[in-house]
Image (cartoon, rainbow, N blue to C red):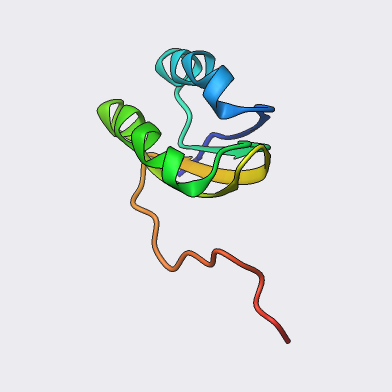
Length: 87
């Protein structure tokens, strides 16, 4: 089985969300990795529904106006680590 995996530095998902959703509609992508969300976790909750409407799962870890990453996947996500564990 082949998978299509893409990555995108969105530099603010709040600003780029329409383009990201449009790209997913027009591209058969299994997993999309996003970085530089620049959204606090509580703001990602509203975005979650928009990905779900397209049939995608969405896992995220963000900070207000700074950093943040997400995975958008056609497949359910499990065993997610939100912070790098201390060794």
